[in-house]
Structure formats: structure tokens, C-alpha cells
Image (cartoon, helix red, strand yellow):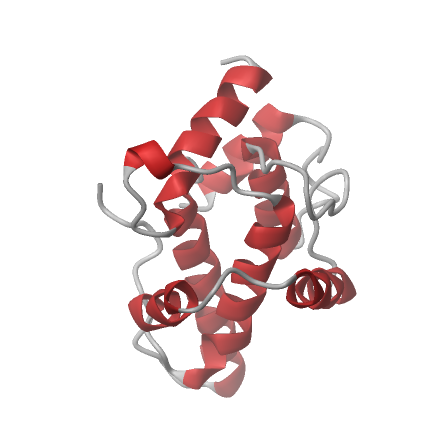
Length: 165
């Protein structure tokens, strides 16, 4: 699949972040992705379910430019960014998403971040199915909770990594 086709497909699939009808679909930007990802990862230790986190995020207004800037700075501080860095207003692509997954797993030395197919393959091998953004959020929330549980020697009731279609 060509990169342009992937970007269009990602835009259509990602419109499922909120319960918007298909006619009101919008393009997800780096900024919105960063804001949601930051809030999910920030809430990981609070014990909220994925559904509770997303309901709270969807209940509010769209994030302000300041909130997006803070989210991007927070993610950058821990080494999470798309393959070419964050650009708050840029449309999010599948390659952007999968390169964040690669960095999240600390595999940037094993996977060529400039290769979209290598990043996609890595994400899929980790059980993350990035064609639906909710799957990515669930995967990362699950991974954070699993890591924290291992560090604490406690098993948490974590969400499944992959959302069923």
C-alpha cells in the first residue's frame, strides 16, 4: 500500500477517536494524538479502565494549543515522538503511529525508524494493530501497566492489548 493511501486510510480509521458520524470525520493531527497519548499514559497508574479514560477525554472540549504543547513536551522528555518529530498541526500517518510504538518499546536501535514497513511490522509483532488508533492506545496502556506491575511485583487487571473488531 502506498504511503498516501496509508495516510488516507489512517485518517478515516482514526476518526473513531470520538463517536462522530462518518460525515463528520476529521483528520487526526500529531497534536491531538500526543494529547490523548499523554493523558492515557499519565492515567495508567490511576487504575481507570481504558473506557473510563477515553470517556473523560471525549467528554471535554478539544485540547487547547497550550495543552497540546505540554503533552508534546512531556512525551519528548521521555523519548516518545514520531520518526520525524512532533508537528502539532501535521496530519498523523500510520508511519508516525508505528514509529512511536517502536520508540515506546525502546527498539529504535533494532528498527529503522525511517522505514514505514519495518515500523509497522514491529508494531504488529508486538501485538499492536495500528490501523485503528484505539488499538494503539490500548496496547500502550497495557504495556505501561504490565511494566509497572512487573516493577512492583504485583499483577494488575490490565486491558487486552488488541481490541476485537
